[in-house]
Length: 317
Image (cartoon, rainbow, N blue to C red; front, top):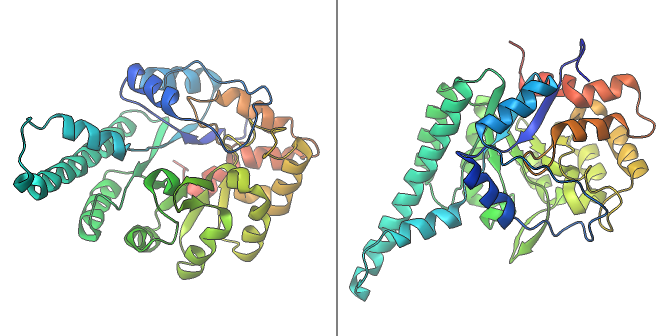
């Protein structure tokens, strides 16, 4: 790894402190791939000290933080801060107050991660936007502020946010990012919460309506990976990362190593990037797994490990 070729992880999570990171890891259930084939999870909690140490010692050129704000947790925390003994007549006012508190907590969380990136040349940021919390005008104002602060784009998680990729509430994000050249990196994979889903095929209408959108789908489609090749063939502008799915090779709903190599080569290494999902997985191990995929050439490995990310995300500096 390293040498004259860049080494970039495009799928990194960052938490304010180790306690918050451990809470996030403990509460997130990885269900879609089926039985664990011997996955090795990282021990890091995911604060800035863990990130700087892990990526600095391994010689990474950049760690791209894909920030994810927990809207449900923020609503719970806002509700818990309310005084007891509320009357039914206060319900509408209370609901509005909770939603405004959640919106401000999201803005504050994004400002924190943007400031962290400004103070660390290793870190780039995609911020978290939940359109169930912010209006179109609020999204536009907040994204303009964050873009001026140097963030690279937006991270979406339709399943966690209770949406489909084409949900009208997401249109403002697509409009702004498409016009401004900002990246949208979205979770991809099947849903398990009501109608929410992020299968690769469900991004077709998005790519058709916003052909200039710089869209990256995480996990190569996750457990819906068999849909990924067709989407990539139809929409050459979409790119992917290999986070998580590469760690679950051999699970019932994941590809084999050979199938993953075939999918990557079908798409083209110039559209596929290294992602680790740190601190769930260790980025050095993930990079080694990419290096070990059967049948990839040296140029293809270099592209996935960093060359593609530098080009697609504009990381030259």
